[in-house]
Image (cartoon, rainbow, N blue to C red; front, side):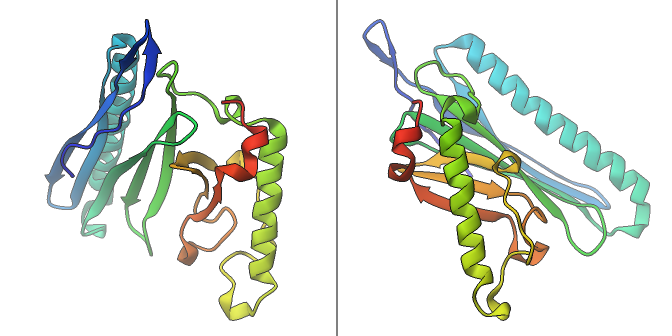
Length: 217
């Protein structure tokens, strides 16, 4: 994946401070397991933030490796190859939030593997990971939830062969992962939350202009 960098501008003593995000890669294969891991490593003038964030990434990596090795031993020859894949993307936005989206995929037997997301929204003024409730007002989250439900219903109102959601799907934005990409807000629901596995993680993307009045940033 190589080195990736994002720049977050922090106004400190009238100087711009940059935070860079570099890739750390890890790969190993055994008789019945394989893991490929790419995690972000932050470099910042805020050493405390840098240390805490990077320590958290290492913890996520170590726990995931420990888990896949344990499961591969338990599965023995029943599963030819247990897999763990961790990758990430990073985005900047027009509201000064830099989002890091970490995706973890695991296959430990059965019909298919499972994926989940971890999202970190970094405040450009503090360099800290902040909860979505401190970025968007409750009214904004309600607006987004209603918009998502409308989009789901529009799909379900079409021919059944084109349905991509469960027929009784109810979107609860509290269960979603939310991040920011350029001038868009992206809302992602986990596997099986509102749609079958074949539809993947359900993703909704809206222009930030739609919720500008609800932004706290």
